Image (cartoon, rainbow, N blue to C red; front, side, top):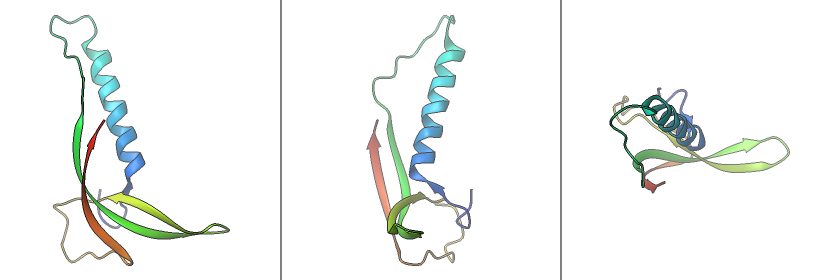
Length: 86
């Protein structure tokens, strides 16, 4: 992932959900099982506005790569760190 093609927050959460489901399925029938009670995720995001035809401006959250080049800029956006308990 790079800042020229950021992932939407919903995409990242959905991918995490799918990874957890896959891990759970792969662990079925094994001797050691882990029960997930809580998932805590901390993400660095950019909150920006996107113009959508017929709708106007829509606020979106994009997850950014914290190791990316600091010179990359998002227009009309502010960087936020969010922590989610899922």
